[in-house]
Image 1: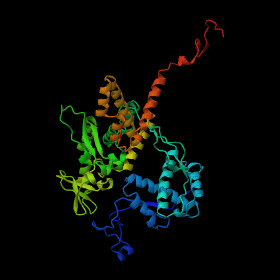
Image 2 (image 1 turned 45 degrees about the vertical axis):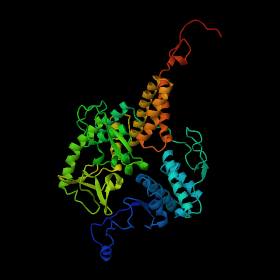
Image 3 (image 1 turned 180 degrees about the horizontal axis):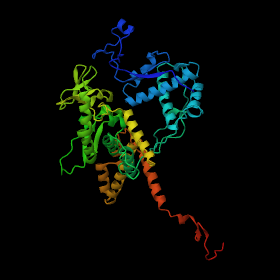
Image 4 (image 1 turned 45 degrees about the horizontal axis):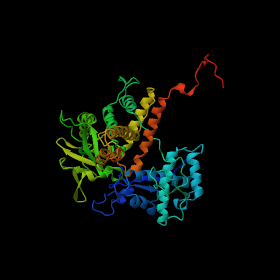
Length: 495
């Protein structure tokens, strides 16, 4: 079944002008004029909105993005927009041109069949389906509250509490159309040795024995390795790390300083849920990031500057003095730390050589690297591993999981060892001063609730179980005298 109809678009403060003038443009010269900076009607940059099958703009529908989701992370808004687009397009293409206001439970049942079980459908995974149900359900709850629909087409049921803390999660209503697979408790992560092999083979282009290959032509291998190492050693989300500017990169400490980790701060404006926090970057990783700045980034910036790629436009946000990272917005100075990821991509910074992007990670054209660009880097790394016969793959979020599991395991081992050497009173003082390792990891990950971080405890329990099972000898399961070749002669045993 071919699904078409609704489309996702993004707001722009300056409309994209066609390369050639048309009769309509000449008749309406103000059609592509820029919205004044001080206009109250100016829409946020890069905010998603939906257009109907005939190009119509539904004001009531798009208030969901401009009002209800306005302060949600950009990737959350995009996920909602794309999931709604898919469902609305199904209604229009497969349900006789039905609109989103008239969706029924029967429509949702047909949609579920097509998405999950139809031989000609996409057959999405349970996790994808659960996300789609959750995002569409949230929209219809809002639409019902706004009196835009007569009923929510998604049936509800009372949630089964799964929280490890008594009383949490009881009495909640959740979509009955979820997969019922339960909360995702299987955390995909890579132990340090597996990560290093994935990085060396997939990102650096080594062979299966982790030796350099002459045929590998990866100009950006050093940049990509630094990016992956920074992610697995700090636990940053992809959108957070991809939004870093040069102003968030700490300086390398002097030789012999004894400093193991350099501290920087992730601003609230680019952290999911406004969870700005301190980030500790290992010196070895920071050195690789600094090498990327010194060599690869500088070279590509010079090439792009010669092409005139950094000539300021009306959309540019200019940092005139890098010692004071701020820009002029709406007639006032605004610090770079308060800019959203989309606004940061428009930053140009004044240097002695001329203007250049303030973003840390640049692509081969000298422009800020996009989130989708980084996902492609990981996809290509996984393909290289498969090509070399290495059964390893990784995603950006797997590296975040790896940081969480490994850090939590090491912290708990140190915590337990320290407590074992103390008496009862000293243990109480120690816990008050140093806190719970689970809470420390929660802060590093930017989780609002420790319940979310507790997911990694299940992974540690699974790891401990595998370790203990490996210690059980095979002979413990067979009676004396038995071998794979048969029974050995021995003393007769009476019943």
